[in-house]
Length: 224
Image 1 (cartoon, rainbow, N blue to C red):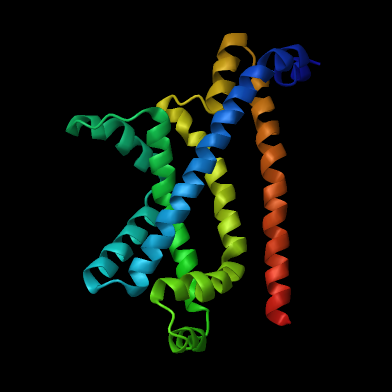
Image 2 (image 1 turned 120 degrees about the horizontal axis):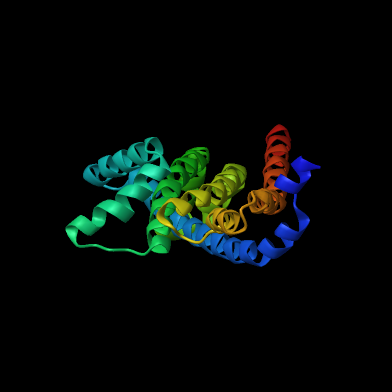
């Protein structure tokens, strides 16, 4: 009973639930914003790496290598705590969004590069023969095919972004984890942390299953 009262205290969980829901809303907003910005930036970095002049290709390669190697927490701390020394002050939400987007963009760029390079060369030649411009070829011919190949790994990366939003609590952003730790301190009971874990599981587990389904479907399509 002592274990239940300490970690699964129902009255404490009921009191903490509205606080956790506010944190969940911030977590979802942060995750979605980071995914949208990171996806666009990642695609642009990918195209720069594949088709831009050599200086831009080199810059894109360095960007991808650096931000795939750096832990997100390090990037977040540098943005939130170091930038004020050069006169740039950002909110906790903006700092977390930028940090997550920059790292997500690096991984997205690599996934998109692999997807584009998997398209047969004849598809590019056919688009050119039809007189399509580069951007029109990408939008109408290449990217739709590459998307079918990259859907599973991109979805997996999105799941990682939502998990990594918990790091935003380091800069005092009121995400789900931060709200849970505050509720724990307020109520002198760790049950809110268990509640936060249950909420994370409830919205991330379906996404994890979706990744598995997409991977299996991709394998079946390749066999077919």
